[in-house]
Length: 527
Image (cartoon, rainbow, N blue to C red; front, top):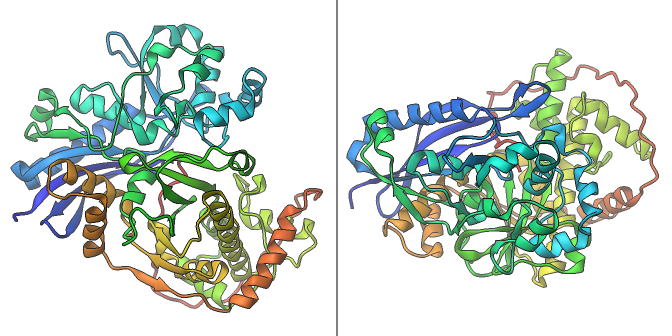
């Protein structure tokens, strides 16, 4: 068949891009048409998203697509991070500049909310892990601080739904992103209206929820005129970027929970694809999350801090005059002493430290471990700790689901960190398969292709991904040694009586092997 073109508008918290996927019936070839920066904008001591600038950049990308591919374009769709939203008035005016999920207005709101509705009840009505950035606490904060604005609102749209409205005029919310809000009921598969009423949030705001692959309508006539595009279909992919990445896991075991995924980047999202949410007391205790996926599935997963630790270490080293790329840091970590010290990657100390190497050293010192001092030792500590945390979370997933995980698929930009991939196989004792790097774009595009009838089932989508990218295999090594390290790791992070006192640490210069730079592109730390 002649190549069909599908456009993926993929927005992350640090950058966005317009991608073309060229599908020949067997393989997808990706073409990045336009990339542009993103990030929070400070306005009067608040953090906001500049959605109008993003909309301008999207239209620039669509114009490039029109000039290059024209009538071969079948459809387009948007995926983004979760939780953030736009409010529209009845006359479709945008009410305020939408808030960024790191804005400070939600601090303390979660605990205040528990005084009105118990924590357990919120979990059993939503299945979501507890984070102050969730849409629920943003809405509670807005009701408290911006009540008149909320009273003017007629429709709640998550960020990808807002851009779909700009593209097609639709005012619906797509399922996978709705489940990130902590306002969606995983059993009834609709908004958790009872919870919303108890918190005195206006339920008429929350409109229809549609499934991935829904045709929202043709491209608005004015957008078509400005960009030169034909009036193509606007189709909802799995609009949450992690959901899109999981669509593109190249597993041959679709329908079986014997594999786990790690969407690896600034954050590591590790989980299982299951037919339903798990809402047990134990799931509540472990603070796992249930997020919607393709074909009504749920992703039982845990957010882990991820390669943020390495990224922030590199920035710190560069501030101190040690210029190094990621491949050089990886080589220094390979050469460093193994199992010198461990940290809990999810400790609050590592969420936004002013100096990540110092934060790692302080954690190790406070937990009475040897302190890593060289750049290689610090990076090795971070990577070993991540791999051991993956093993811990793997155990939780097996406990909650009742199945044994046989293989772990790692997708996303973090797949390029080969040392972490091998450490993950060693720590878990499981085969690790990595790729594709561009999982989110593949997932977005192939859901559109399925809507167009160019591909059939989810298993066929994943076959196309296997045809379109290479997969690298890692087998476990030194398993007994890693088992010993895991028992030490578990003992360390269970201790809760450490006093962390920031102490300055000098980083001596070290020799790094000079190799061609090969950075691993990571998705941002968006929820």
